Image (cartoon, rainbow, N blue to C red; front, side, top):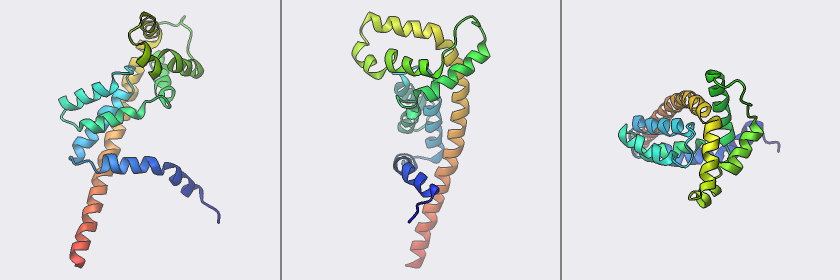
Length: 190
């Protein structure tokens, strides 16, 4: 029996879809608060503030009356596996917009990956946070690419947050309406 490409894709996405269903669609909150929380988390995921993202998402969601837990989940758009895919486009966009330092050499994706694996790794953050060498490297990195990443991250973050809000609000509303209709059919058939 041959498995279709669509089935293979769904099988690979099943853990992610299960996560969305159990952690986002079933949250006991209004669709608007959930969508707002997700948008906040996704926006903050694009900011170059690794190590502070979850705390910022929690605080921002509290201030904006959004779902705090979903905001924290949304931050995980950027993680060790996706950092280059999130931050490199932000860096490139910021560099394009700023054009402040044309003589400064441009980073390529491999250099950005090395930066996150070595200088800004979670392991290093947890083990060397208190050392002068760690902060010297972080400061050097921030001085070299921080402004570009921030400018590009804010722009891409707004775009991604808008998409996350719109899609999640529609998806949650649709899911809940469908669930309510099933419940009504079951009650009427009894």
